[in-house]
Image (tube, rainbow, N blue to C red; front, side):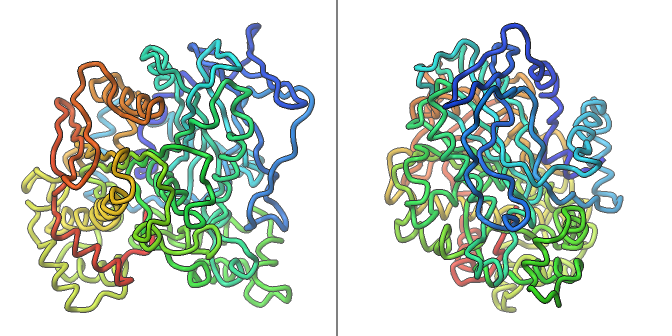
Length: 579
């Protein structure tokens, strides 16, 4: 089993029964009129689903690596009952077995492993002649409460998956629990999930991409899907003026980048709110400066000396050949893969400048309500399997910082950084566990700095600037639940267990009811006796959620170290990309 995929995609099989039950049409199959087409869906568990709705033309041939092209309007009868293929993607690297992976696997193997086995099989099931995914993947799914009328004008929740801009699919998470709760809460919503291009197909950079007027193809896919929703969701009973974009990890970063796209104007009017789970935009390089991936890709594919140029050569490759070349680039699950192989970039068009600069200048969509939160131990699962086995002493820590995390850090800055993140496992992540989980002197140290550098510090920087311009509708949270695995704590993506209702606990109700209320009213305070969630203002109050309690606390954990990391970022030093 691929450890990182199984954990970061988080028990996705828990949704599989709802998925399998909803695929087949029955005598009561719902249908809607969409222009000149009739779309026939399926119904199960009180939810009507319309799957594999095309929003973009197949990005193949000369459209590979290019901005998406709007799909032609459908005609005739569409049987929208089966999920579309995922986009072509890069597999996750399985780190060699080591004490860290063994300790984590020991816990998960003691649980209901059949669920993990099903999840693994489902996520890795071959399609299209044995290859996972397809280039013809620009589709979306629409799910709504059963019986929704065309004129219902329900708010819309628009989901973008995570996966490090390397992998992911629209059907990983099923919204059954979320929609059912929205109905019982008397705030029914429509849920839309989309495919977008990932890995080299969606985020290849380099001078050729810049010259071709492209870059950030996956982000452009997302926006085209938003435009489809704006134009068509009313036919499903949705309100195009009440769309909330929602993402986790890479999906959350994407949501943040849409806030600043084209200096705030690109996606304006397509959504009114954003939920960002474990991801904030920051520190992007220019498209033309991201030269290593295209160089490795071209070299592996034999395109470096192609007469027509590298880009044309790569566009002419079969998808299998491109995949084989793409897999030569170090990705997630490797020692250096914690900094992204396929990051979004500043392309000068869709993303005109770095997010830091744009937000600081007020060049973001200020009309949007925001929830932006992180998990307490974001860095653990992303560094423990591959990084910490090779980072076991001070020299190894320094090497990793200077060669991977902060490649251009000065010696003086490194010494300050080492002071803020000392060789003291009791201070590291998972936090609050003392020496428990310290399998070496460095694993909790590595997890702490990575979590702060790539999640906590960027979130605080973003919220600090946003509340200057939009002080009324910005909220933040700190998730401290799911502390069952001593080595990884409240790890990256563990909150999805609750937001998607894979388990039925107090935290599930807490997350879902608040998110549903936010989608419906732009206020995450649902009137059921819950503790009031305050706006994130100058007092920097966040909602802190753990298994037993919900409290309001100041957002001041490790402020000084994180401020130092922020100063490095503003000087152009630091991780340019992140998961």
